[in-house]
Amino acid sequence: MALLSTIDFPSIIKKQDGFAHGRVDLHCHSHCSDGSLSPQTLIDRALNYQIAVLAITDHDTVAGYNIAQDYLVEKNMPIKLISGIEISTSWQGFEIHIVGLNLNVNHVALQQLIKDQQQAREERALAMGEKLAKCGFPTVYEEAKKIAGKGSITRAHFAKILFQQGHVGTLQKAFDQYLGKKGRNTQRAYVKPNWCSVEQAVEVIHLAGGSAVMAHPIRYDLSAKWLRRLIVYFKESQGDALEVILPQMNPQQRQIMLNYCLEYNLHASTGSDFHHPNKWSDLGRNLILPDGAIPVWAQWE
Ligand code: AMP
Ligand code: MN
Ligand code: MN
Ligand code: MN
Image (cartoon, rainbow, N blue to C red; front, side, top):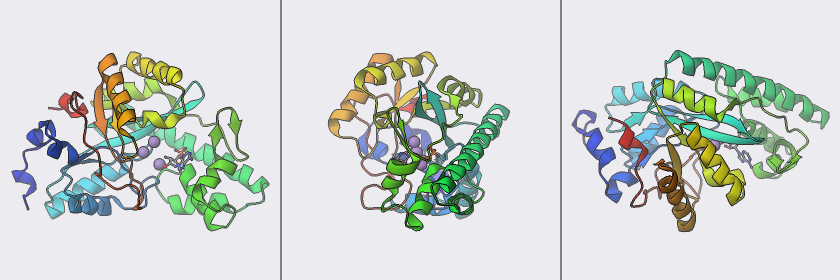
């Protein structure tokens, strides 16, 4: 196996062949937010799947980066780790996720945004806890806090506890019945979050020297008209790239995203959005960018 020092990172990530692209995963989660694996275990898994370039993109935190980077250096592993984050934003009442890649994790503007977002997370969690207590589930908040530990607290932690305590039959039902929002309908424990704007997220990512990527454009439940509006707004906000590839996307959806990239002069990114080992998705699987896409990493020297 090649040592880190023998890997020619620029040629791996710039090569246009499928093999090279297939070894890149720029969206996944560790237990620093709502993923189940530690940053070290994620790295081990990535190595196992022969991934050459990995970004850990936890919700509103970069805490996993230094842990994973120290581990890579200690074990001298042949993986290039790209710093990353997934920032929650609000746009027209929708929650839009902006991934920041290849940024300076210590930049003051980024650190300040993370602090504000974490405060918004804590406040929303507390308010969700109060609503759930009124639903007759008084201990969900403290249990969710416990499993989130020092990491970002998310609705996924609440869903897990609602499931473990037997209040819902599946994690999806926790969102459908308590935590989620569908169109104008909010569920019983839904609390409107106080996230930053798309523009702010992009600006801070750029101040920290990174690239701003719109995460999973297909997952926002937007009509074609509204999705186009969002992409136009993202472009006007100086956004850099769209996630053209997620494992769940079918060829037609991939083509539509590629067309948006070409039409609006946006780069393309690829990632699994891996959270937990399961049957349907894994790190690095089925992530090859289509011909004609300009990879987001073309911006990185
Ligand atoms: P949050 O960032 O606190 O709003 O938590 C949202 C996270 O919950 C997402 O990143 C997903 O990992 C997870 N999740 C799972 N199912 C759903 C769902 N149906 N709706 C929203 N989030 C979900
Ligand atoms: Mn998540
Ligand atoms: Mn997301
Ligand atoms: Mn994600």
